[in-house]
Length: 180
Image 1 (cartoon, rainbow, N blue to C red):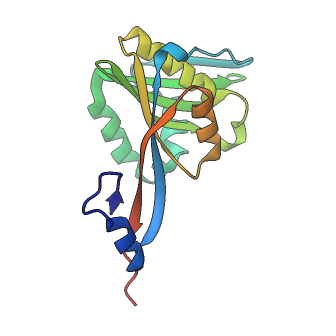
Image 2: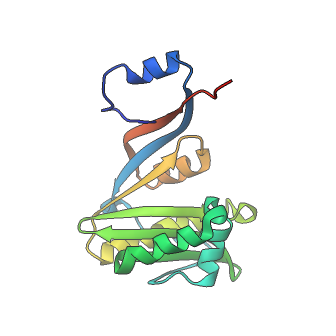
């Protein structure tokens, strides 16, 4: 069950906890103004945003990420987004390192599918993808960004805080106890 600050009835979360429902996956929904975001320069990191996901983008964001177990479904999801999507890829030394997806709808741009290959982390790839997506969104008329990030991902939380994101609200899940 997904629980947000406006879940009803009041006290639902505590009642579920009291009945043994396990807490899972705390998520922070964060927002930022594009006014405060700059396209960072990272030595040795080259980024680009394309209208379609190429093989290198899909390798990072689709095969190596949490979507690796559901690649066909993920490809179908990406195909349905249409022309509002931008697929950002960062390369380190010419090799794919980090990827992200931007979707612009009016004044807002969503940032999704951010993933840096574990062996290439802490080299500026994720920061470069975020900055590149911010510039891409700005050129398409957006002035604000939003994203969701798991609360148990300190690296991503630090990246987004450093870029000027702040939490708008959060949610979490509770899972029913297993039957004996």
